[in-house]
Length: 266
Image 1 (spheres, rainbow, N blue to C red):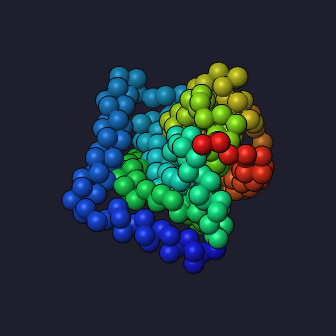
Image 2 (spheres, rainbow, N blue to C red):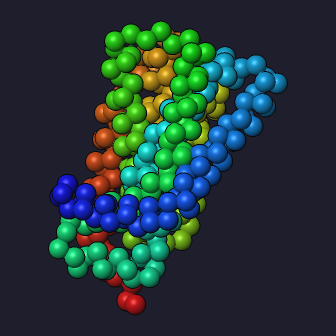
């Protein structure tokens, strides 16, 4: 499966790099647009001084980590992007994937490796690196070991949301804005301290769609801060387990969707 994936992705990457100048401009544009969004936020933040007791650097730490993880996911899971995948269902081109002698999930993964998302990943990592010094994190061996686990857990979780969104397309290719609420909207929400939201919103994004467990609760561990929401301390260490657990559930739901799929009739 891995060898097939690498061969398919290599073809996609060659096509993307065929026009080097356009590719570089695209990467820079994506990175700059997200960076300017953070700059605008930082300028507005200066008028408040803090959000929920968190400094600009602490928010930037979470922002950068969330952006880098989402950008990495968007690059790898781009084939499952609900908006893109819905077009395969509408046009009937999904049936072509079913006829090929390669694993379906492998094909969808390899159908689009969005290398242009490197711009978003780079700006997220840059903000994270700049914020690290000002956020007051005292790095210990445990924190250094946990950081990459949080990152890959967040990538898996955000990817699971894309897979869930793509699965919904088997039943409806319309009304996918609710998916965007939890993907792009959830990424933005994860950049801020969750205790500033209402109880209903916080519980939704902790127990139903556990976005808070990906960035916010690990950040409490990195900052050595108490949990103002009252959850057990173990919540700070669940990011990798929850991220890959949700991705597993998403792939199971995907298989159900494929099994129920009957074609478009076109």
